[in-house]
Length: 325
Image 1 (cartoon, rainbow, N blue to C red):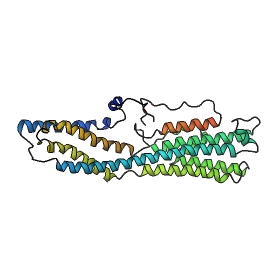
Image 2 (image 1 turned 90 degrees about the vertical axis):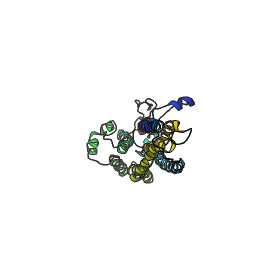
Image 3 (image 1 turned 30 degrees about the horizontal axis):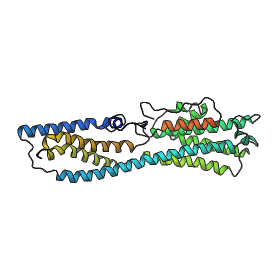
Image 4 (image 1 turned 180 degrees about the vertical axis):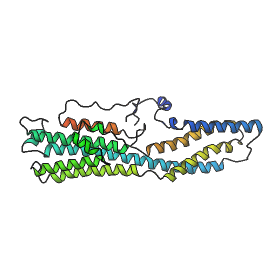
């Protein structure tokens, strides 16, 4: 995600990184060159005198603008829904951590955890349970990020999971779900041991279920892109419109010599809108305008480990060249 401090209008106007220009400039260059060649051939040799007016291009351009606007609105809806789902992951992971620390443990332990992560005389086994389960929640959010980005980075989970559990995860197709299943098994074991009141078990289980629901929403977005035929049709119409536009402008008196400039501006608008919609329709990637899942996971890790009283916390994520990943 592009992160910029408040800047001047002119500086914003001249920015290139993270904008559509970096993706579409070759297309703009080619269409402008074609427009220049058509204009030169018309002025020098009288070619391409078609008596074609701009009316067809006006009508098609209007329809194309509506088409692009609808597609970009759909893409942004996917982006915004993905951000809301990850906001839910942040809140639910914090809430689940609170429930594990406050409602799980032998008599007196939970109360002492409200003031310090390592209470004097607390049952060492219960403290170990809290550290194990909360770190598993941290592992879950990192595993979810890897899962949505199609990355195999099991080594990044080593600080949060036992070696045996990491080995078991190697063969899992859906590692986040496997981690939550182990967390549920730990909660059940704690209940059977008498560490959780019967009224608190459904509450903790509901938080775990909420994480699964949020993950399912993210997987739905990832697995259901905008229909391929829709994108292909849009790309083709934009390309045909921009490449044929010079033939409709070159015969207009007073405008014909400016045909390359007009085509450059129009193609920047249409190719740019097309590129923006294509980029944000997949919000879980690592493009400059995608969601900063790494920074979100970093925030969750800091928050949850601080509840455990960890002294050595990772630094907050910082943008690199104005990009937060």
